[in-house]
Image 1 (cartoon, rainbow, N blue to C red):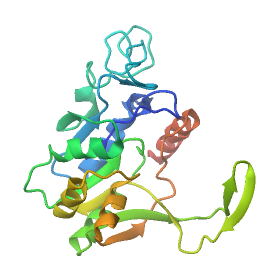
Image 2: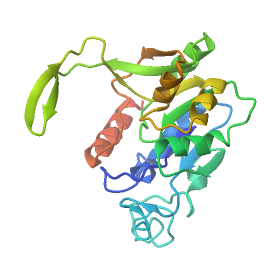
Image 3: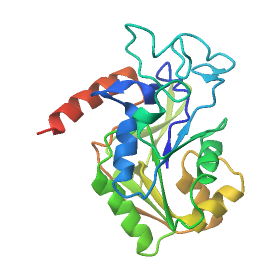
Length: 242
């Protein structure tokens, strides 16, 4: 499952449908997910969710409107709801909800009941390598309820109160977690059955007492959050091609 349901507030718009090296950002994520998946479910934003929230997404740059990504001279890419679903390459496209967890639950409803392992990937991570997908899936098949890629924290971490430093956080044992994340299907469905909220699906499993393990993450697995990240992703993709 590739989750592309966000409104891109920090970016200034739904960056997951912008062009990156000839394809929409989300299409790169779908391609990578397909390396281990029998089928890919893509979760897209509800039609009334623009970059500023419900009811504000009808302007010319709103993906999914006929006046935006398809207009002559536009540098936008057609997105779900307009003409872009086929270009994204998913087997199934579903509409997400108001939160990330709600969007994943919408995607889960479209995953076949016989699936034993479910991979959840953020569409805004277009540089995730197939090897990373294979690694988290292998960890689940080895017996874990969930597996997440983790990168050790390198920076010094400070706790603040406003603009005042209130203390230094000990970073031993701290990691930065990425997607793709893989889960035993039953464990993921149970965790989402509680209708909880978390910043990632592993957090929901942790709340149930399930076993979540880490695999080596990839520092190059960039998350597109700001416009400069999209430019960097383009450079990295170009550099990875023969």
